[in-house]
Image (spheres, rainbow, N blue to C red):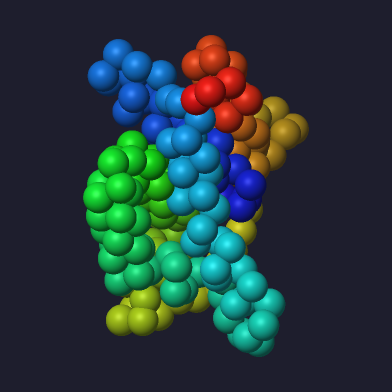
Length: 169
């Protein structure tokens, strides 16, 4: 998934979670979702640039780093009386890992999931865009579906009252 699509997907997940309680997201937890959803790429993409041959999904995409990071942030937020920030961060981070796993699972490229258990498993070079099929003369790729995620997320965010832009949230 394109790095900037992750916060949109994370927001959709967090909004759905809040709606289970009959509430909508507020500004603080929404910011935490965005940070959590971006963090794996903010760590691993610079490593890809700095380290020749690095695939861009390793350290922060690994469950061996993700789980302790999520637990630490949740613990700190909980003890500071800001549990929703910890939950928002967790939803954002986990949604990133899920959305990166979705396309390889959908098209059967299971070897691309090695990042989840890095360094125990190996990671082949990420293949990027996946062709999902043909619609007439148009090739439907994962980029099309990512565009739909962004559009739906913007609509849900608007319906939720535009958290982050709201006053006092």
